[in-house]
Image (cartoon, rainbow, N blue to C red; front, top):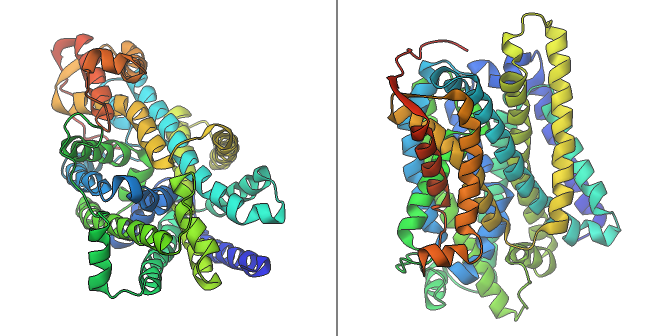
Length: 494
């Protein structure tokens, strides 16, 4: 592709984002930044959340894994569907009943201040790790396949991308993110569909022949019945369900968009409609992966060392420049919904949960805005450092690494909320942080090296690591709980 054409496309995309940010940021205040004045349209939020949930990880890693895992990822996607129903039926009613801005205020009312701060810090660590992993994947692809040819260093690429995110999110916050996510999801899905159709045409197949070709090459296998393996279907389905409950229902970034909807009914419609569409979109990414492997076999293309590089290798080196540009737009569109929402949600969590901004009567609105901007800028720096670190250490497919990290970081949140909702016991609030740290440590010890074989034999821990981690936290809270029951009503406003 022409460097000038590529650069022009990227700049035009950024210009469009800035126009949307300007339009949505007019008259925005701190309440707009944190929760969008609780006036977001549920249909817009639902559609935009597709891009946030998928991100560059799905765009790159899911198609690339089809050659090894076939369509087994659908087991996880079906688990996601179950998890979204739990979020809609259990967690959203709780958040709306308490009129929350930060969902971790629930922990303050249920357990106490130490638990509240622990939950917020767990989210901050979890979302920072997850968002920067996603960001690294896409920035690295832009670097390897485009910017290396211009001899632009990786650190410069990462700095420019993060600066762009910072500039279009600092004013409007959630109010802006809701609409930029809609725009970016549209571009990503269009790129996905166009690439599938074009590659099918390049294979010289009609739709019937295309489906038969996937089957004949055994790329469409979904179910894994080997109970001891990491891919066993029950592990994948349950793991997917609990990943959704933790990474969506207990995640401030995802929930701040949902609770920006006017009422509970709208938020539940958003969640349930979005969940069904998400399963279909994941299936489309798997179909794209099958098409990529069939195309690579037809043109005798050597497969890249990293499965994440398969899609960009074909799109940018083997397909016409127009399809390469469509891929590039889709890739950028997959990058920003996860990164911009994360940096906004992390800023909100630090301001509300750690600094207590909403409760500070001694701060003027100008002081609140100034401190919020400082936090926002600080997270941009943290994102930048993390992306540089991942560039040095990463050696595996990002989707695998992301799910591994989620198992360790979201497990204590799962245990905390589960204990609060499923029991009425009080806990010793000051001991909750120790439980939240000990649980992932125990999981790591169980999952590390030869210890798993020693304790579990042929059984391999997969996505259920999150469930085990949450169970360790639940048990730890139970051990430090009293028989006195929690009776305080949760009808306060925050």
